[in-house]
Length: 221
Image 1 (cartoon, rainbow, N blue to C red):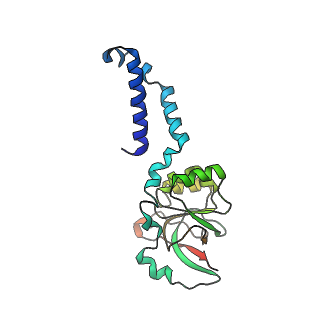
Image 2: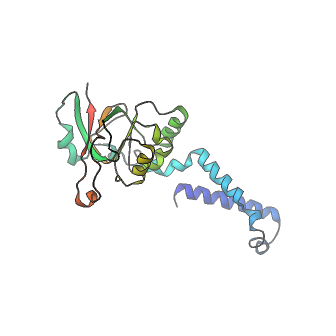
Image 3: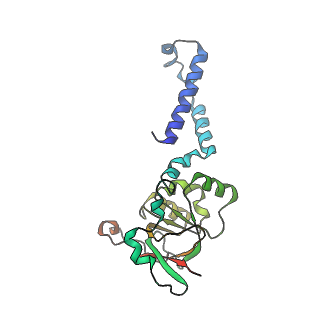
C-alpha cells in the first residue's frame, strides 16, 4: 500500500476501534445498524483534511524523485557526446532537448531549481516561488509540484509526454513546459533558456520517435 492510502486507512481503523470500544456493545449490533456512530462523512473529511494540511500528500512523489533516483538528474551517457562537449555560442551551450507543451512567441530564461522533496514544496508554498524560477523535476513531479506549478516561469520534466498529467497542468496554468527531457547535468542556480517557441509533438510523435525538438541551453559566464 502506498503511504497516503496507508495513513488514511490506519486513521479510519483507529477511530472506528475507539468508537466501538466506547459503545460497550457487541460488534453484530453495531456494524450494520449503528455504523455511522463509528465513522461518518464528517470523520472522513476530517481525516483527509489532516493529511492534506500536513503536506503528506506529496510524500510518495518525493520518494521516487531525486533522493532515490539521482541518476535521472544527471546526463545520460548516450547524451554525453551530444551536449557535454558542445560549443558555446552567443554565451550559451546546449544542454538538453525535450518536447514543448505550449508554443510561445519567445523562449524562457531563468535559474533552475531541482525539486524533489516535500520540504522544498512546503518552503515554496510558505515563502513563494522566486521570480523567474525554472523547475527541474522528474516524471512524478507533476503531483509533487501541483500546488506551486503556476509560480514557475518554466518547467523541465525528465519524463512523461505532452499528454501526461503535468502537461495538462501546464496548459491549464499556461506554464511554459518541456516534457520527456534529456539533459546534461544541471545544479540549482544554473541559468537556462528553454525553447518554448518549438512546435509541440504531433499526435503520433511518441509512436514514430519524432520527439525532442525543443532545445535547452545553459547560459555560460
